[in-house]
Image 1 (cartoon, rainbow, N blue to C red):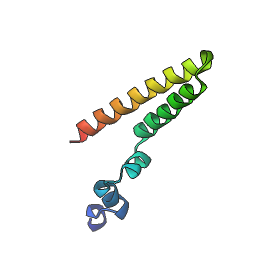
Image 2 (tube, one colour):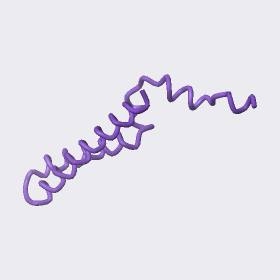
Image 3 (spheres, rainbow, N blue to C red):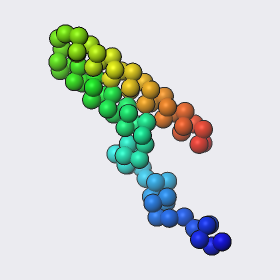
Image 4 (cartoon, rainbow, N blue to C red):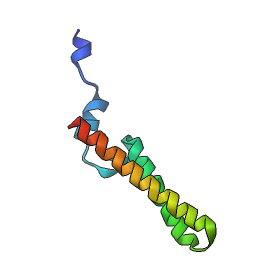
Amino acid sequence: MNSISQTSKSDEQRGSSRNPLATIRNSVTLKIATFGACLFLLGFLINQGVLAAMFALWGAALIAFGTVAFAIIWWQRQ
């Protein structure tokens, strides 16, 4: 029974981590939002044609999905 009640170091580090990069590395939804930001910036850099518009639109959608999903999960855990 003692092994069940003990928490591992990784669980303690996740809970006490205040580093934003560690939060992004540990969250799939924030990784999706970060990838969306990269796509959005790529579309901004291309700045011409259909491909630029597609990247910007996909990026914006992924940013919205990732942040909303992260907020919902965070809110449910509180």
